[in-house]
Image 1 (cartoon, rainbow, N blue to C red):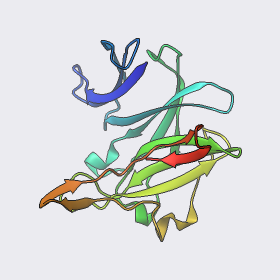
Image 2: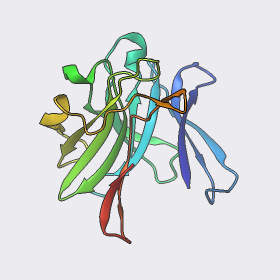
Image 3: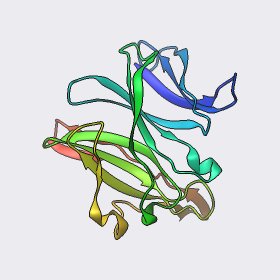
Length: 189
């Protein structure tokens, strides 16, 4: 089992995507170290396979931390999850007004011959959080990706701050979709 996480690289102090492995979810995890630490930072890892069955790591370049775009990258990774292979490919970035200063938290699923990407956009992590969720699709993992036209007028899910029992809580902006075989339905959470 593999767990991707974000931490500061000890050498460069950059935010980096790293991986740890264990024999089971309860097991002791062994840190395999950072996989990618771009100058602007690398966060929000997600693993998926392309249409040929090759394993890929996806992540966000943290450009919004310095007022720049936030591309979602994909790069092949070895089966041991210890090394990226080949060159990275930009899938999409925050290029529409409704997305604000970022896209992040990408998750991928396949259905009816398409890859679907769910992702968060706008603003996170402050009291005025206005996270929204968008959807894009592509016939191939490496693109080209097309964003859902209705994203700009109606987000799939609007998130942000919710008051519960007198306390302000920040709600999630990302979700993952999967199929539950026992009920033969797709679920997003």
